[in-house]
Length: 527
Ligand SMILES: *Cc1c(COP(=O)(O)O)cnc(C)c1O
Image 1 (tube, rainbow, N blue to C red):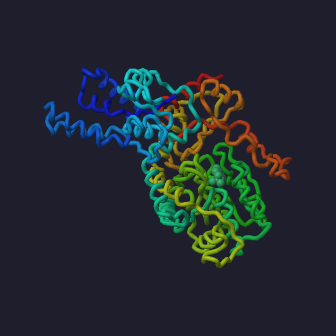
Image 2: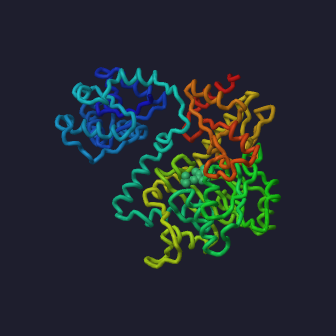
Image 3: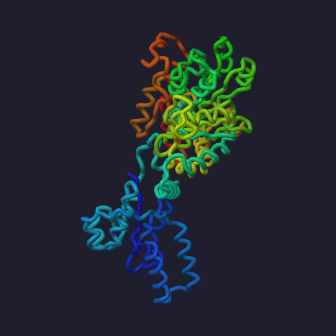
């Protein structure tokens, strides 16, 4: 198990003052942390004391000049991560009685998952279950190796945003305003600007975003019951649910076996006089837009709706997905590339009337308090999620770049004739890997890294036996679900083949290179 470590004051001072006599391992401890890329956490409750003691001792013993001391302090300060001191004190805790400073450190440690406190204070070691010695810490870190690789560690994903998220939540808590306030307004502006549309409407989740787009077109008289919407057969079922939920008729279209996205060459044959729209899904994070689709949208005067739940930040030429059609639905489900701390979603569009209609429907059908124009529903983004999303949006392009690096590593290094790698325009796999060049960059944001294998279940078991967690996106296609009994006898051979063979490898902005190397090696040795 990987731990997080808070350094007690004495350990920080040992290092800062190089107190070899009392702690010969202080420098070694520091180096072990740096070499193993382990964060040094310090509770905010400790900071003033460590700083005060450090400068006082420097002066007292005339060890170094004030200038030097300042440099040492600044350097140390830049290398630590600060963890908050909670205000919730537990009355009965023995440490609270005996040493309030240690108790506050203990409380800070409890706000981190799997945390320990490194100290040489005997009393602290006795009274706290989290306290360990320098020796123990060094051997633990040197031995610690996360054996199991999880598919997606959301705690790790959110950890780099911890401080800004805490700030945002505090801001909302003390504002006294929890819905339809400043955070949502600001996020809507920032996200619209990011995607490149005039409007963004925050809603409760991704499915609602898609449902609301279609519902608003119905209210606006631009769609009616029984109209047909083209949608990929190979998608997450939510895309299709949004269509059926509005009493519209989903027309399934097979995917392209290389991209797993809708096959643009198979769309036109499905179009009838009742076909009024196309919903494209940028599945696994790969842009699903093609000039052929643009052409059909114009030729048959169709609504183009994007399901951008998996592709936040992705590009199609100069434009981002989510700005390519008439409207787009986005999901901020925690595991998505831009993930909230709960459910959240948004619609983006340039259509002012559509935006206003969606906003009203999602708010009981009302755009003016107590005046209801539609038989609406309640589907709103809340202030806390908006605050979290604002923080994470600022790092999204960087996160996607990390994902792309991981994807590139897999693509360049997995060589196993039984395995089909995903095809993306961002990079391809020529015979000489050294010549891999980005073609059209950022057409894939690698929400998922899907490989295919005819013996998929065996491969998945093999990886699991080696401590590697993989998932299947998705095991059962929509047309085989009980929810769509009317389609159960239909044949969508490519969709079914993909569902039988697909396997998602771990990918995230925080997965380590060693982990990706290990996964690659195990796959390469699999027969
Ligand atoms: C996640 C997802 C949705 C639904 O989003 P929620 O926020 O979970 O409602 C819709 N479509 C696709 C393709 C998705 O991956």
